[in-house]
Image (cartoon, rainbow, N blue to C red; front, side):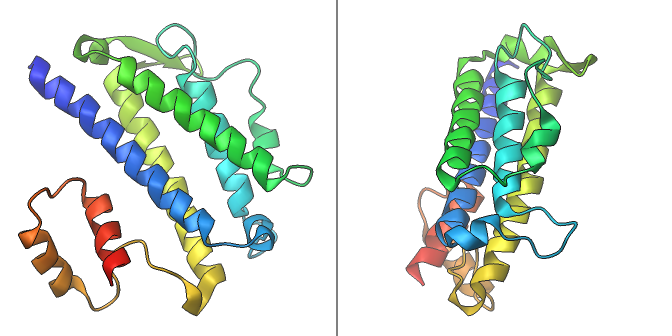
Amino acid sequence: MEKVLQNFLDEAIDVFKSYKNLADKAIAQISEEEFFKTIDAEANSIAVIVKHLGGNLRSRWTDFLTTDGEKADRNRDAEFVAESDTRASILENWENGWRILLDTLESLAPEDLAKIVQIRGEDFTVLKAVTRASTHAAYHIGQIALLAKHFRGENWETLSIPKNKSAQFNEYLAKKEDKGNYLEAAQEFAEKK
């Protein structure tokens, strides 16, 4: 059982790294203006999504096993306003949140997965908190990729399997000795095309 739990932790770390890499590659394709641009009055900009996710990760994963994941110093509502921020300050916050998450995950042992942590006063097993965080990150990273692709239009460099290339990707994957993470394999394939 310990091996299975360690595999879960290792896979969680790989998945988080892959999603961050995908978001970073999407963000790298957009201009300063596009980083802060919204598609309508109710939409969030990529800047706001990045700021929110960085703040969320910092709050949830700082002193993860010993304090509530909703830190007293977090101002979640302020994460959805980026008017006085710079791209550099938002990306610094983003990197900090991801560093805290990954350092914390790498410090966990299989026996930690059954421990109880709190988020906003609600009890979660560590395993459930990790799963919850990965789905939250994936949700927002999908938004980042969609917006970046929208802004880049025909200049978008795909981060996944290009349209009408599924068969070629399947062939590529079949020949690939180290299949690795699916997201990374799809990105590698896209970069070769």
